[in-house]
Length: 125
Image (cartoon, rainbow, N blue to C red):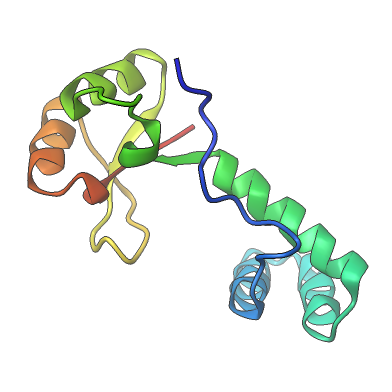
């Protein structure tokens, strides 16, 4: 069985200024002024602050799994969705494949969406 870790995790070598800016904006909306300050330092080139941003982003990435990453090689998406549900993952649909969605769905709705576009389905813990 596949280890449940996203394939494309953020690293110190791959983190972008856009990701850091987004993290800082989300932290600001949540009232986390310490994280906002860390993000500002990271944008200014502080390697230690960039590393802290990577850690926060990776923690968030570990809590989310795209159906296409979750399915074992050759596993039918229907079976992968049922396995995710049995393992306690929340089933979600993207409102748009390029943006996060907050729509929690049941197994049947997730399977129907995956048959249209597997990129619409993701799981969260």
